[in-house]
Image 1 (cartoon, rainbow, N blue to C red):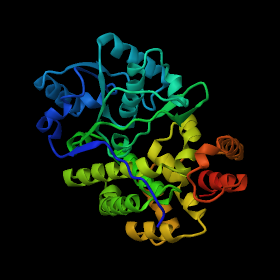
Image 2 (tube, rainbow, N blue to C red):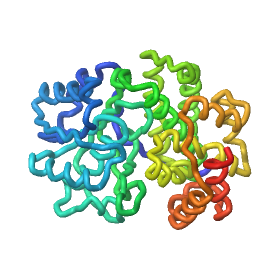
Image 3 (cartoon, rainbow, N blue to C red):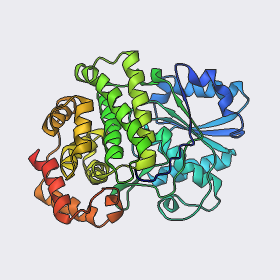
Length: 367
């Protein structure tokens, strides 16, 4: 068995009404919170009110930044951090899916370090950050239990993960906040979480403990497959999905994501493809790359599929039709990915340009 290190500092609090019932968890983090949300969802699903009520109950001030867009940009982080500094915020709270949670992580560094710019999040260096609380309102990104944050880089025309990384101090999981999600978002985020489990399980950095969690996460997903197919999301199913998503976050916090995520960044930016669907597009061809199919066979067995073709058929069944891509797109995406070898580093085997080209062509054109 290979050696490994396992580090998961985030305190996870799961259950209905967990924010109000565990309001003391905010104590000691700071005196004033900068809260990150999108424009509407956190207000509609009750999560923002619960956070504000909990903060008020324990005497902690708060200010709201509700301008987080999907795939937040570095410019948004700069704007939010300036407000946080002006208001004297000394910790951050992200409420939502991956975008508000990632924005909170990024701004936590900008608030803590005078003179730091958002672009410095994408560069090497050692910077401190203020405490972070995450409230997941979708069941997909797992950002509440990872140290990662992904931001839009308009100058480069893509998305990328920040070099500066930070775990949440506290993560709240209450599935009632996901009950207002549309069927489309519920399915896309669930598939996103499944791809986290698959990529973490097959990553070069996978380890014994992470693999146990990944397999259990996939078992939970398998229990939800009938509901995903029939679009029947009961409160019990939603609890399973948010727990599965958080487990997936814990898995990739240790092992990282791999090629489906790396391949999906440019197409997602250009075609505005939902993140979960973008990952799913590449999953079959990714798993076919492995000369040793032991883990692939484990994945299929746990999920209840007989072949990768059947798994890919499930993705096509529950996700929207894909966009059209050209041979020129495949060539361009291949060249861009080969120019960033760090994105290939977590694949267990060496990869050639032909491998990456084949992955893109199979996924975007042939399958």
